[in-house]
Image 1 (tube, rainbow, N blue to C red):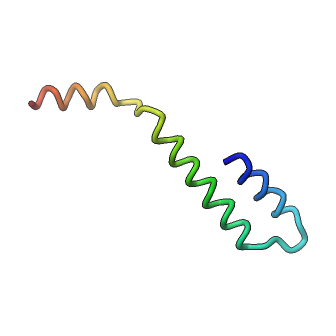
Image 2 (cartoon, rainbow, N blue to C red):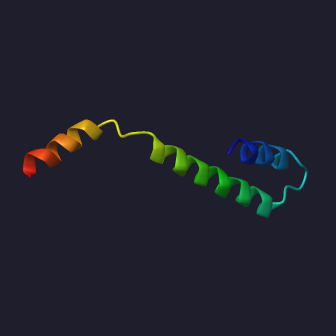
Length: 56
């Protein structure tokens, strides 16, 4: 993910940045963020679990 950021910033600093490299860097970054957000528990996860247990 950090490599995608570095590549994107480096490519953006060029006179004529390659749009395909920029799009690829953004896609890799978004994929990394998606995987990272899946690992972080929700702020309201305990409340949601209690609600599920109460309804059963």
